[in-house]
Length: 289
Length: 186
Image (cartoon, rainbow over the protein chains, first blue to last red):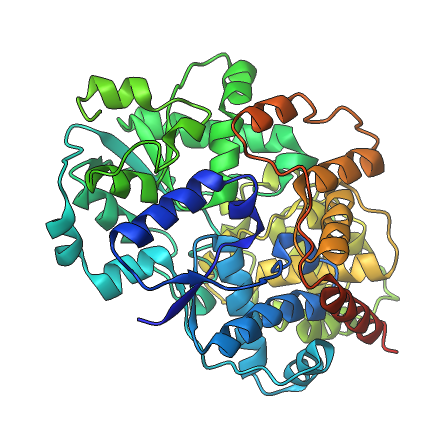
C-alpha cells in the first residue's frame, strides 16, 4: 500500500468532521497514508461547464504532485475522485486533448498511478475480515440507510467504483459495525449537488425525498461518503423540515464515523459533536455511547 | 408538443458538432424517454432531456442553447447510465452549456454566477475559499442575504475557514491563463 491522501477543499473547510474521522481511522489502522503536500483544487463541478481543458488540467497538477512522491492517490470526496479520474483519462487518451492538457500544465505528467476512494482501500486492500477483528463495539440495533449520491458511481465506465444503481461497498462497511443497513431505493439518487447555493429550494425538494424515503424504509440515520451530500442533508435538514412541515431528526453520519465508533474511538476524535443534527440522543438510546 | 422545423436549418451540422464536442451520437436515440423519467431536475426544465436530444437530432440548435434545461442539469449522469442506446445525454447537456457560454447566451439560472465565483476563488488562491465563493455569488446574483444566516452556525461548528489558503496560486493562475487562451483558439 503506497498512497498519498488528497483531502480536497471541502474536507479542509466545510467538512472537517469527514477529514478528522478519516485521519482517526488512518491512525487507528496504522496505515502509511500521508497528505499530499501543497495540493491544489480539482476544480469541482464549476469548471467543466465552462472550459473542459481547464477541468482536466487542474486535477493533472495533483496527479503530478502524487507522482513526485512516487505514490498513488487516496481520496474521500467523490467530486475530487471523479475529476482526478477524468484528468487521468484525458492523459491516457494520447490524442489532441492529452497534448493540450500537457501543454497547459507545462510539464510531462505520468498517468499510470492508481486513484482510490478510501472505502475501496478498506474493503479491497485491508479486507473486511481484518477490519472485523478490530471491532470492539457493536452498533447492533442501529438502522442505517446508506446513501452514495451520484458522482461516485457514475459514469461507471470512468469511475469503476461499484454498481451505478445498487452499490454495496459502503453497505459492507456499515454492516461490519453491527448496524443494520436498510433496503431502500434512493441509494444513488441525486441530492441537487451545487444547486445548494444557487437554487437552495431545488436541493430542499430533492433532499426531502431522500430523507422521507430513508425514514419510510425504517432508517434511524443515514450514512454518506460525500461532503456535499452531507451538507445538503445535515446542514439543510432544519430548512427541509420547515419547508415540508415534517420532522425527520435523522443524524447524517460519515461512514468513517460509524466505523470509528465500532473500533472504540472517542466521539470527539470522530468529530461527532460537529454534526448539525445531533447523533447523541440516538446513540445513547441504543446504548452505543 | 408540436415542433415546427425551420427548413433552413442544417439537420446534420449541429449533430455533428455535438458529436465532436460531446463525443456521442445523438442519432442513435429512439425517444424512449427513459432519461427524462429518471432525471431529478426534469421538473424544472422547459424541454425534457429526451426532447433536448430530439432537437439536437433535428439540428434545432437555438432551441437547445436557449433552453432552461441546459442550465438546470446537475450532471448526475442518471440519464446516460440508463440510456439503452448508449447516448451520453449528460455529455450533450455539458457540451451545449459550454457552447452557450462561448456564444455569450444569457444563462437561465444562477448556477453560472456560482461557477464564476468558484473559478475566481481557485484562480486567486489555488484552493476554494468558501466565504469568498458565497459572497461572490451573492453579489453576482443580487441575492445579497442568501445563506447569510448559516454563517454563525458554520462558525459555531468550526466548519468554515475565515482566512484563505494560498497554495501554488501563481502556478494555478498560469494553468488558468493557458487553458483559457487555448480554448479561445489563440
